[in-house]
Length: 458
View 1: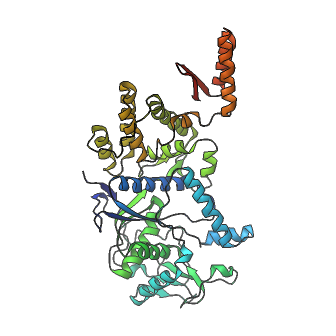
View 2 (view 1 turned 90 degrees about the vertical axis):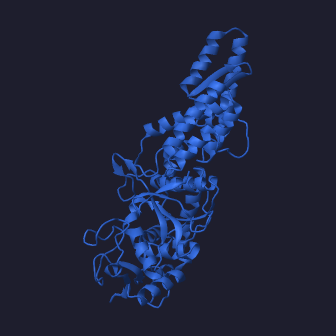
């Protein structure tokens, strides 16, 4: 079965047909590093982590580029407010980004370029656009893109030029011929720090937001590549502007397939820093273990809205526990590479090959877990673990997951279990029952078996 992906450009499911057979080149817009990542960022990172994991599981070689925006109005403002250099702020935030992503089991991209490392390439691209009449200099010293000079503008968002408006991150000011025109190069302001200024043919300044992704993607993946991804909020204007810049300069299609993940919502509003209704990844991980958060994201389709609440996370934890309980009851046997001809694996693959259908794939995992519980087949338990691994799930020892989040430390729990065992040996069943009840009140479930007493988190 051919992998089909919903293409935001064509508005249909298109087969993945890499430009270079067997090699998928993918670019995903990353974070602007002026603050900690929130759950909306986690949603995008996990979504495209699943994409690149599935591509690899399907036998493709993957070159995955996810950029970092480390120069931006918000970054400059935050650094000045904090009394630190831009570099110090962005280094701190990148380190925090990596820590949060690592906690969620997100594999590092092949390359993670920083915008400030590619200013010469941006200037080269701006020069090509100016030579083609697609860019012009304003009286204020900025260089702007002439949107109406590019015939294909609007094809990604599906709107005509008259329907479109300047995006929220594009400042419309004096010197623009048209409100839809956007800045490619910003002239330096006297009060901006020196490290926010680069020399150029247009004078001191810095790149606009959109030009960085065009320059980095073309430099690292070529003028045309296979997949371009990001959040749904980037479709317009950012990705529309990338197409105008890149295709205006090269005359070639930028990406064959455009993918956009859905929003995380809180009380039916998009989670965002501008609305102040966001939860950082670190705040969420103080209440829920990382794999539960990842599972909460993965079990929803990447294009669908994702509604955040503590109850939804609790439900995700309980559901994931059912899978780990099956692995705990029937220790898995590792049979090596997944045999995709196996009926369970084939159903899982069919779901993932239809636009990365994780809800259907996760449903297969639960049906397989039920079969493991019924048949006690260690081979099927191994398959359950292996299929989960393609989604970045079920790779912990089951006991570690099932005990995670317990209020008492492990030594204290084991001491209470030993105390209960002594009470049972002395036929003091009232004390034994009281210890069980006290542990249960703290979220610790005891299970008595032939090998002794084990425990897990409720």
